[in-house]
Structures are given as C-alpha cells and as structure tokens.
Image 1: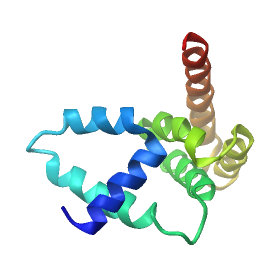
Image 2 (image 1 turned 120 degrees about the horizontal axis):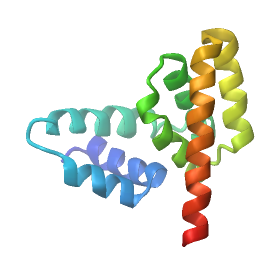
Image 3 (image 1 turned 90 degrees about the vertical axis):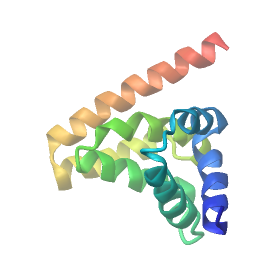
Image 4 (image 1 turned 90 degrees about the horizontal axis):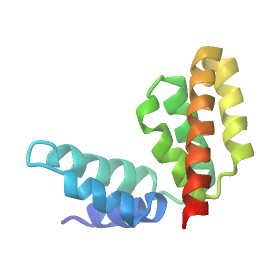
Length: 129
C-alpha cells in the first residue's frame, strides 16, 4: 500500500464515514479493484487531502460539479458527507443556486430534489437511532 493510498483511505473514512467505506470495500471485486485504488489515491489521497481549501469548500465544489455535470448518482453520498465536512444545508443550496445559473435550472432542480430527499432520509435515520 502506498502512502497516497493510506492517506486516501484515512481521508475517505473521515469524509464518508467508516460504514460507507467498509461497505464499499466489501463490494470491491478483482475487476473494479484498480478503479477503487485510483479513486482512493487520486481523489481521496491527493485532491481531498490537500490543505489549500477546507473540506467544507471542497464538499460544496464537489456537490456543484456533480450536479452541473448531471452525475447525480453520487450526490446522496456527498450530501450525507456534509455532516462531516461542515457544509450546511444553506451552503449546499448556495452551491446549487450557482448550478442553476451557470449550468442550467434542470440540473439544479434535479440536484435540489435529491438533496431534499437525502436530508429527509438522514433526519429519519437520526430519529430512529
């Protein structure tokens, strides 16, 4: 294991939580292991581990980029991660308002719906625990 991979796993766990990372690792197969190594080292070990901007800011950027590009599959994961990154619901809405202006209202509308549903699920989970 490289230092970048070890740092990536540490950051990934801090941002996404142990339960999410453990579940992702359990689903890993020999086929997708190279991809998992790539994202752990490059996304989590390099980009997310840089100290130049805060995790709150990085979280907002990630949510805005996913929404703007229509890559909504990972939006719930990153909305959930805001509980650990410090990005508030207001921060997320500000990021999605930028998406509406610079990438289009339909993309923002979809992302806002996903965020609303994800926050509702998070509230239900909190009440159940």
